[in-house]
Amino acid sequence: MLRGGLIGCGFFAMNQLHGWREASRARIVAICDRDPARLAEAGDTFGIAARYDDAARMLAEEDLDFVDIATTVGSHRALVELAADRGLHVICQKPLASSMDDARAMVAAVAAAGRTFMVHENFRWQSPIRAAIEAVRGGAIGTPFFARASFRSGYDVFSGQPYLATDERFIVQDLGIHVLDIARALMGDAVRITATMQRVNPAIRGEDVATMLLVHDGGATSVVDCSYATRRQPETFPETLLEVDGEAGTLRLDAGYRLTVQTAEGSETRDVTPRLADWAERPWFNIQESVASIQQHFVDCIEAGRAPETSGADNLSTLALVEAAYLSAAEGRSVDVSEV
View 1 (cartoon, one colour):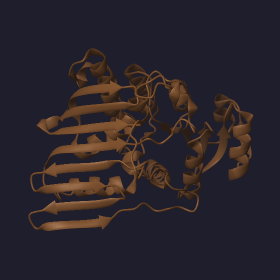
View 2: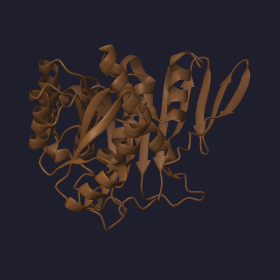
View 3: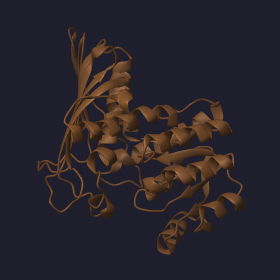
């Protein structure tokens, strides 16, 4: 049984604690947060007696195999390097770092320790998205040449995470990073990106609309579009909708978790609605289910000694797309990903 410590007991960490309670061969035995109320709530809810307000002290005093870092991005590098120094496996929330230099240093630190490093890039682990990825990778529509990944909503995300309204960067850093990662999972790495961004909501600091055109290795293209300023009924939050064109057919993931594959042989549609866990709630259940899935993958990879699909090293390519998108929007030009 792998013993883990969770650093950060905020809004999303509750999902992670539920996911760890479901996990096979792993459990959270210690938690850390500087907010006494959040620490008490998490500890009482999940029956965790070892509670700390200092991460370094927790890692020094507890017998741990891994650490789950669920804090905001500014603290990630120091915490990852601290865990690496203690010889621990690490799973860290996205965005991995505030800069590519920090991200590369974090990856290097965990690699030098010989431990597994995974980024909690959970959108590609949602079961409807997994079904689409597996169909494309399995050749259901032949070699893909175009994809669109779309997340458009008017959902009030600021009530649960008010800091999102104050960040200079918003939708691409917080949400678009997930959708860019889905595009990579479907189409492979991208070499160039062109991005436009807008701020529609005057009450927030960062951008809440973004449209990005990616050129992938081999010349395939994808469009990633994100919006938290879109009023629609029915509201599709928090679904990511997909369309992928391949040489032998087309795949669509439509609202309501309907996956359709069309080829010359005909069309097949199936229901890929996620599991509604007893601790989950609508409409969040697709994300909540993915948390349990990604954390189990982390455990499996530690035990097998293999790199996770969303490893720290792999996530450098997703983070580079985020940085390149901001550069593209700021300078009004296409950006080669190698520039960042």
